[in-house]
Amino acid sequence: MVEANVMSGIYISEKAKERVTQLLSEEGRGADYFVRVSVVSGGCSGLTYKMDFDNEVKQGDQVFEDKGMKLVTDRKSILYLFNTTLDFSDGLAGKGFYFNNPNANRTCACGESFSV
Image: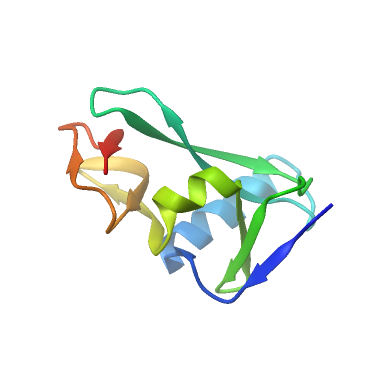
């Protein structure tokens, strides 16, 4: 298992961290779980974000930590996610996690997919 410890790269807002912590607790997942983010083909703009909870770092994964929260992505996805912030909104305009990605040239109207 190869693990790259980098001080910056993918970030998490305080609000998203609070929500992730709440969800991990509700699901009974221990402190060994972290947020896995990735980019997959799909959506109306060509690329879609994917977010899961995981407890296994795979070979080639890139490991980041922000605000005490471990964020992991695969080597291919980091090319699209570098300097991206995972955020959470609970407002009337929409509730849920979203990605603030400075690398995205275009996003779809629903905010679910993007292109670079």
